[in-house]
Image (cartoon, helix red, strand yellow):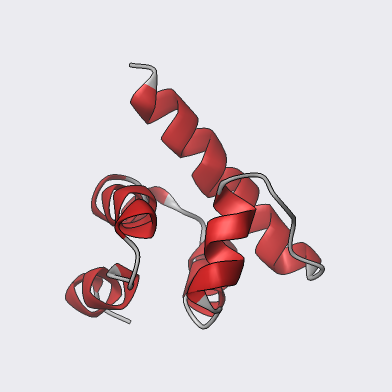
Length: 83
């Protein structure tokens, strides 16, 4: 999936998700290993409510592939907010 389609797919129904996903796509996605790019694309198929809970630390994905990319995004977001 090209970067413009990823940006569009990362725009969700919740502003909180946009603030997590869009900066990650714009600033970090191109640096990911291919396996993580695939995980990210899989993540975008998830429901907004699940994404919100995962990124807010209320729950974690049962799928280890999704858990891996959620942790990567959360780590990036925490560094980005604290810088």
